[in-house]
Image (cartoon, rainbow, N blue to C red; front, side, top):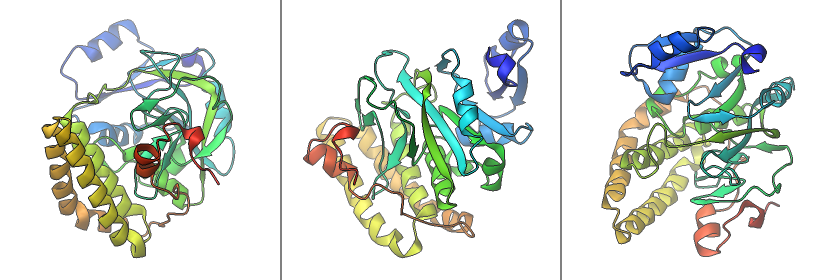
Length: 308
């Protein structure tokens, strides 16, 4: 049982329902951290983990269903000296034969800062047919079920709270990669993720956070000499994305991208100050454009990409 393998803490992020009472009445062995305000995924986890002493953390979203024996493979991976974090195979709770959007079989980032996964590129989620049953070094691990050494988490300052939600785990993983440590995908561990628990996929606020935070982590983590030229291309690609939303009738998402850009401009002084002293690198980014590979060349699965 999970409770026999690890200490279980539940962080209540300022909820206004009967969540706390339900846990206290039905699961007295679970330890509660009652946070007064909702400071998002990033701020909530940062606040919670400050009060928990452990060698390793398993950050598990409330909309994740675990399987039997899912935990030992993750803990075993964290015993490796050069490994900082790892994630399990993330399958869809709604359709358990398919990978789930947020994490799938491990995440990567292309040259312009767009994330994708083994098992999921943009909105195309692959059926799990064992094609990604090999353990692999990845660029980022999903925050839906993230196993991470506590020392690494705290030494790197945890999640960036200005992100609030979305992309904060990719930003943290980028910082991990920049230190020379590794992140692994562990297929021997499987969980099922419902997704959309914080914000529904179609919610314009989610579009806003994804686009703004993606730009923000580029400023924080890319080598200074390449930030400006990469941002110019990225902003242009976002503009094309905005036009695509308009042609599909999703004007709210287009507006969200515009707002995301202006919010990002306002964050630049903070981002520059926040990243002082951190190592920067683009060496582990996928060297091509996933936008070009997917929309122009029609490569909709990870296995179709050029991995040389």
